[in-house]
Image (cartoon, rainbow, N blue to C red; front, side):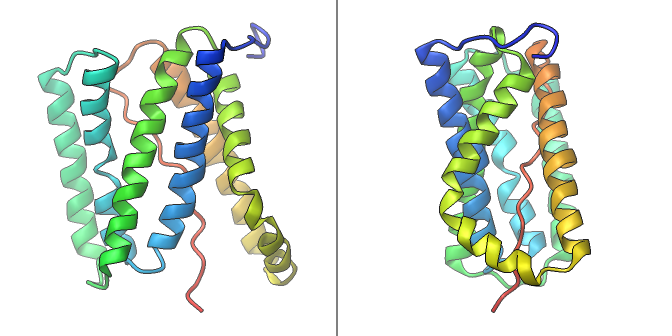
Length: 201
């Protein structure tokens, strides 16, 4: 976007960006945070990272993208690695609601990502990421009063990590990944939006 300037999206492109921001940056994070209050981290990772499998299926149906054997093999190997790590770190504590919420988060991120892909044909990755972040921020706006209250008692280190996660693994990671995907690298799996887990009360 810095090199080419702002591109005014069409009505269809704007609708797709709003859908991506709503599901991928909004619903995903809120639902996953709620899920992780009921599911341990290892189990959550295994459940949420079925998203790439859903992405492959949705891209094949709606974007008419070709599914190659290497893509399927890479996806299976990546998921197998997550399963190994998940079993190693799982405490075995998971409620049915937590499992369902993790799966909802996976579907939300997958649908949002596939919705965003057609927009990248004309709009820069930075502009797409910025738009989705704004939509996600608006979706999470009802939680702003709680955030303000908790920031008052949060340690400086916690606030620092919050800013780090929002800037680097989320903003920069998504922008660079979308730039790569815009070049039609269909084998690139998406980064995961960062969720900020609240401690159990």
